[in-house]
Image (cartoon, rainbow, N blue to C red; front, side, top):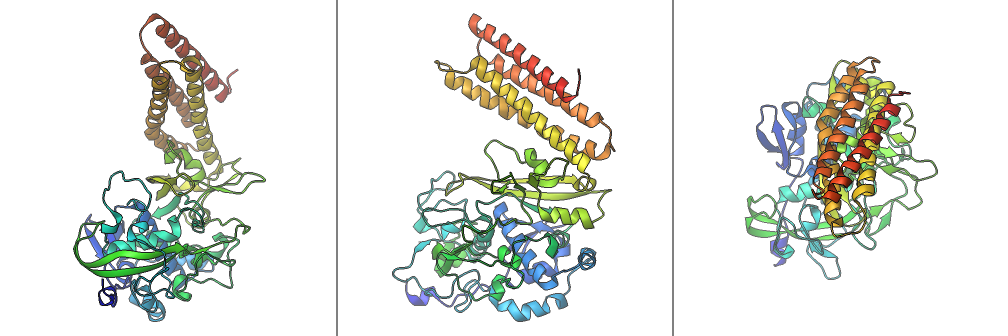
Length: 517
């Protein structure tokens, strides 16, 4: 490619359509940032095949509105929550000051990129495939599962490139020697509010200073559009403000557009130009000795004398099993910190009579460079549960009891059917299938348990019904797995002995939970 084919491209994220939006009537449209904000009351929410992109766009637009309105008091925020529509006048000052900072291919101030790099690929730079922007597209040494091809053949349209770029602040993970994750470390599960329309979702994401990370810098808060468009390679940032955290740059990037006639490798749309190559280096990070950063949209376990641990997707563990940690504030949960923006909603928003929808999005990794899957789960949370510590405690204990029953099932199965032998591998598969079946059967009843607990007003009935239901499902799932052991004399003896031991242990557990003598 000649230099002439590599330069003088423009794609302004502020005005040009790239954000996928679902209309309230179910239709679909793409708009730029400005029109998305102005019409946010007319849309249900963002739409993209990747939930990581949805979170990235949500955090970017939240940062813009946080900068525009900058609420400092409860009264200011409550007033914003009553807003029915954004007006062009509200965006005028921001657009006048920073509108030119959203051009993806600007020669002077490229969006989320470092301007001190060459405008065309140069010798000595770390040139990578643009596929590195997407966790669901294999690149480098990653395995190919559902998408096959050569990474040098992959080229992406500006819309998809923009989608990939906005995921970097929230979802950059470790990538080998010297490649560190973003400000939140190995990506946590992010909790995003879903209001009756997109505007309400964004306004519920505005955070007062008292609910922002305590270790943030107040005097130096450099959102992307307020800082020099420079991302030094492998730089450490000591002071990080809240807006800076939402637009944090963990990678030093420079995109190289080129002429190309054909389909985009991600969305399939026919394009006349796109991005095949880019600089992709380690960017900024916080020093290792920095105090923990508590993102307002993530939950944390805070064990004594140990660093906090963000709630993240775990193999084989459905998101609902973290319901208590993600949403509730129960008695005895001193070692769990739910997302701080939920504390703000509980303190300031009157939602006792209704419920609030949330979307939980995360990415399961090996805590390093390997990425296995993303997780995207929606929840309707009764409003009164956000502030009812007693109900929160009951639900948390209900989840714990389900875990105790699961441990009992697994322990008895190992004791009766485990150990070496020709059937060891088959028995291990049966045990895994048993546990998967158990948790899947509890998923829908758990939501009913949450709803009934929120309406119980102190009644013990929902708790007792949940304990009985969990116990019975555990017994059925164990019996189903044991029935697959085999039918010769020895296997039948092991089967019935195992069932008897499991059922008796579960009943003992149930009695203890119900405080029976």
